[in-house]
Length: 296
Image 1 (cartoon, rainbow, N blue to C red):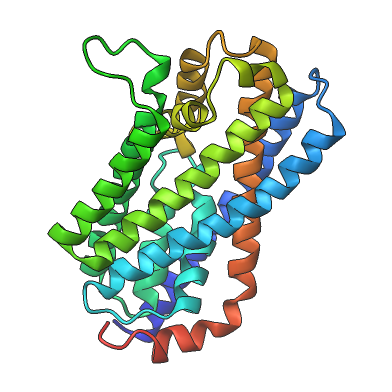
Image 2 (spheres, rainbow, N blue to C red):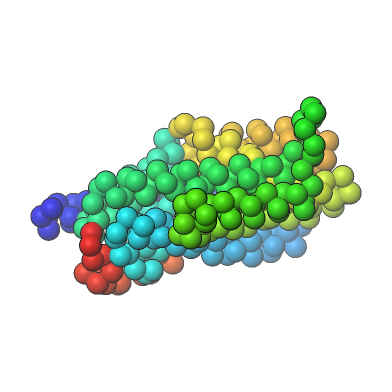
C-alpha cells in the first residue's frame, strides 16, 4: 500500500469519526428533551457524570481486547496505538447502520499498515466475544421471566456460569481468548451496573422487588438484543424496548423511562470522553505505525 493510499484511508476513517461526533451531539439534544419533563435530582445528575467517566474507562477494556485479537494474528499492536485507533472510531457506531465504527477502524488500521484480512477477522472475533458476554450476563435476567421447567439463575449460579465460561475459553481457545472475553464481560458489567445504579436512584422502591444482579442481567439482555439487531445505531430503540418489557412492574414507568434515557446519555458521554482521550493520543501515531505494528 502506497503512502498516499494510507493517508486517504486515515482521512476517511477520521472523517467517519467526526461525523459520529455530530450525530452524538444530535442525540444529546434528544436526550435532553426526553428528560426535561422528569424531575431528576441533582444527586442523580452528579452520579451520572461519574458513571460516564467509569464507562469511558471501560471503553479502554474494549481497545485492549481488540489489541489482543490483533496480536493473536501476528500483529504486534502497541497499547497507545490500539487505544487511539479504537477510541477515535468508536463514535461512528452511532451512525445509521451500526457498522460505521468497524469501517472507520478498518480504514485507520489499514493506514497504519495492518492487513485488511487481519482487521476484518479481529472485528468478527470482537463481535462474537461481545455477543457471548451479553449472553452470559443476560442469564442473570432469567428471574424476571417465566422460564418454564428450567431453574432460575441465582446471582451465585450466574457468577459460576461466567467463571466456567472463562475457564472453558482458556482451555479450548487459550489464555488470550479468555482475556478478551474477560475484558468484554467487564465492559458490559460496568455498563449494566451503571444502568441499575441510575434506576435505583431514580426509583428507590425498585430495590425491594428487583435484585441488583437481575437488573444488571436485564440491561445485558437488552444490550445484546440491540447489538445483534441489524441497522440499529448502538442498539437504539431495541435496547429500550427490551428493558421496558423485562422491568415492567419493578419501577414506575416514568422512572424507568428516565433511567433508560439517562443511561443512554451516560454511555454516549462516556464514548465521547473516550474519543477525547484517544484524540489526545494522536501524537503517538508514528509509534503506532513504525514501532508497534511490526509484522503488519
